[in-house]
Amino acid sequence: MTSEELRVNVEKALAEIRPFLESDGGNISLVGIEDDVRVKVQLEGACVGCSVNQMTLKSGVEMTIKKYAPQIEEVVNVEPSIQ
Image (cartoon, rainbow, N blue to C red):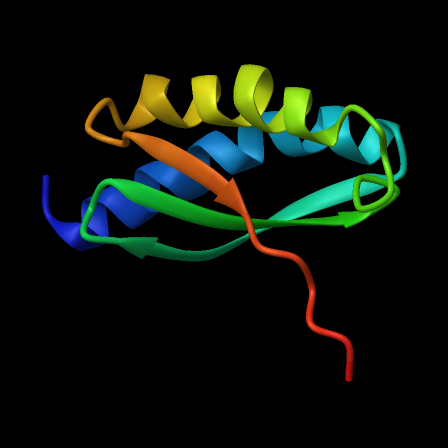
């Protein structure tokens, strides 16, 4: 899988999980993919302060991304920078 195909597949995975996050007032965006094995995402909206966001990240987001892109080893949340 090329880097571009990987990005497309990760975006498909995020599109699949996004409605669940939006229903709770949150969202997610892709920040980047490092070395084709580590996905960086940013949880947004209500997901930022949610006490279960790490569980959501691991059991929901990471699992869904690995379904579309099995070579992904890790998904990490990047905290938004404060301007």
